[in-house]
Image (cartoon, rainbow, N blue to C red; front, side):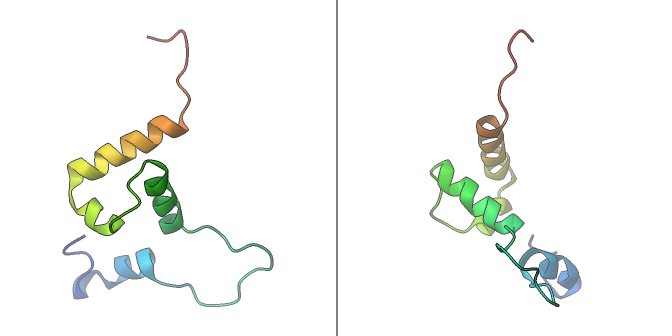
Length: 80
């Protein structure tokens, strides 16, 4: 996210870490994408550290995503 979080990529930064304007609906607050990332990191034992720094290294990020996906998606039996 090096170049995208700078002055030229303000829209991308706002989407990732910004807060929406307006009224919130009643009830439990919605889980944000960032909250899901943090929960996944804690679940696979990588709760320490900043997820944005982890995402800077494509290979480490891809390994994390692969690990989390293997936890979430049940393996199908009978398919090679």
